[in-house]
Length: 194
Image 1 (cartoon, rainbow, N blue to C red):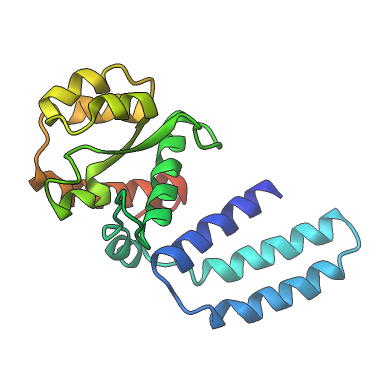
Image 2 (cartoon, one colour):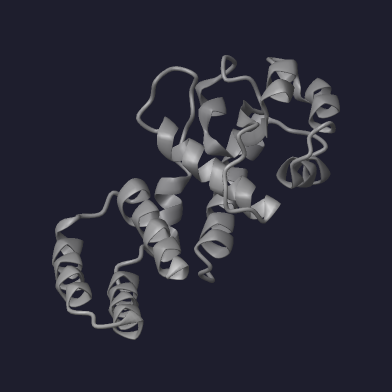
């Protein structure tokens, strides 16, 4: 049943949190599912109910383009922001995918690659990564060329992959990386090809 719960988690992140799609479309689906699951006589019946639910929700799963359009707007700020929770969740899920782990790391925190105080654009998900808390504090508001030495101390595979791909980092790369993260999320975490 774990695969069904993972699917439901991913569906609601895409459908409700990112694309903010209408919930009235799923109310009837869940109502029918609740009735079906209550009538289950055994594990096999329950599995059929979950499979039916998954098929119905799959038909409402946002397309990649719809998902990407909204995902690339995610931001994170040290100030309270409506987007913070969704962005933090997305970044932790991506980090988990790189670490091949299902649990968010307690030692991780959100790092603004280019300082958030330099530009509002730097709040965008394309300029963010998960970094160990102590390394994030050490990196502070350094320029990227100086942060590289701090990032090299990270044990996270995502940070290592980022360093290999981006020996230089400027604002003009943020939008493109945000789109790449949306695709990575859709294909690796949702497991849907684009």
